[in-house]
Length: 99
Image (cartoon, rainbow, N blue to C red; front, top):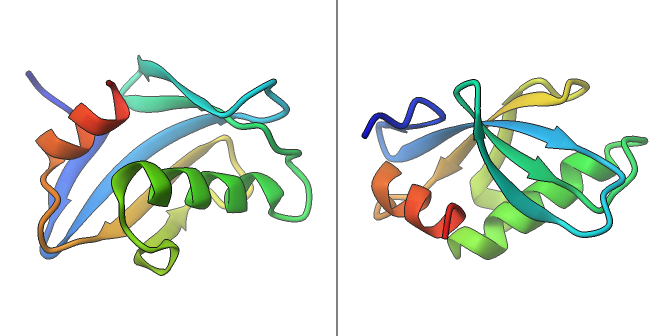
């Protein structure tokens, strides 16, 4: 199965995510238009949604927050997140996030 939203980079993963802020709870909704769709329980102001996204993904994937970087879309609903991890594969990340 093709996982366009989750791809391997040298020593890292790239996740394409689409967020919906101001949700009742933070959760993964599923995959839509080649992006992992997430609801975030955070306001889209002063970077709070970005912080919530990094915190959520680091907790789910079991990597430190410092291993995650939003490389594109800081002010957009669609973002690219790089996860520095020597051990995590796109398949594992997909399995964890789409549980």
